[in-house]
Every structure is written in C-alpha cells, then in structure tokens.
Image 1 (cartoon, rainbow, N blue to C red):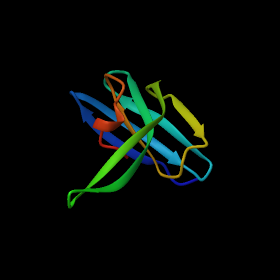
Image 2 (image 1 turned 90 degrees about the vertical axis):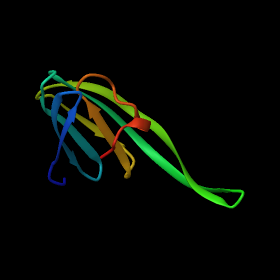
Image 3 (image 1 turned 135 degrees about the vertical axis):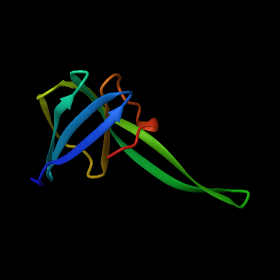
Image 4 (image 1 turned 180 degrees about the vertical axis):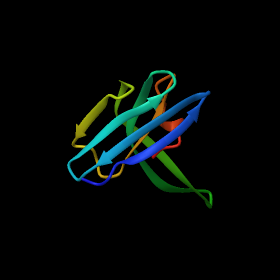
Length: 104
C-alpha cells in the first residue's frame, strides 16, 4: 500500500485534515481533524470527452458518484473495488457535490 497522502482544506471557516492510503485493491480514508467534528466525503469518477461543434472544440465532462459518507474525527473507512482513476473531495459542513469541488 502506498504511503498516506494528506489533504488540508479550509472550507467556510472549517479546517479539515484528511489522509488517504491508496493501494491497488483498497483505499482507506481517515478524518484526521475537523473543527466541525466531521468530514463529509464524496467519491466519484470523472469522464471527459472532446466535442466539436461548428468548428469550436470543447471538453465535456460527466461525473459518476461512486459513494458518499460522513466520518467523525479519528474514524476511518476502507473501500475496495474503486476505479483506478477515482477522485474524492470533502467538506466539514455539507456533503460535497462532484461537479463543484476541487478533486484530489
């Protein structure tokens, strides 16, 4: 398993610290610190395709929510079967929305 990656966010004056240990077959998400007492996670995949219309090219992305969950500070959740290129984001006050979050 790869060493844990640590993430620090300030969202709406809530300080969050999370770690993710990702391996080939499983990932473990840990809520290390949150001034609200919880970390809300959304796990998703993002698929982007190039499209061309009337000579203008653009990239269109769709998001597929895989799971969402809430952890209290010091809790962890192990997940298996995630796609290799999944993304996640978190918030200390509300459940994040994949289309509006800055992922990974």
